[in-house]
Image (tube, rainbow, N blue to C red; front, side):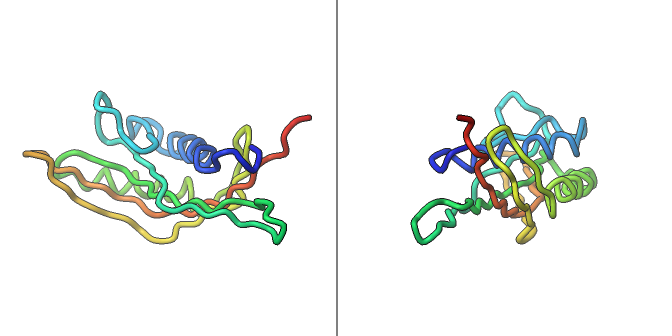
Length: 143
């Protein structure tokens, strides 16, 4: 990942890997921005909440701070299974670090919990998770 690469996509790859590994078959996948219509619940959704580049005086990007909202979504009045999945998400992300093929995740910290309930027609959807700040640094490009 060079300075011009999209840090949030690399952060998203890392989140997807971490969450799907930690949650296993308790979820039907982790998805950036939207859960596809053909996917059954529970599923995890993550989306960019804020983004900021940290630069030197010479304006070189040292790393990017990208905050993601990461949460499990269930359909119906299901709460019990959400608790375990939300805990798995937290364990997979908070105070963790790692790499993708193009970026280094220097740190991941939960900034605050997140929860929401919404209705779409006759259906109720519940969400539980948190806001996670990732410090992302590009790996040197191969010559």
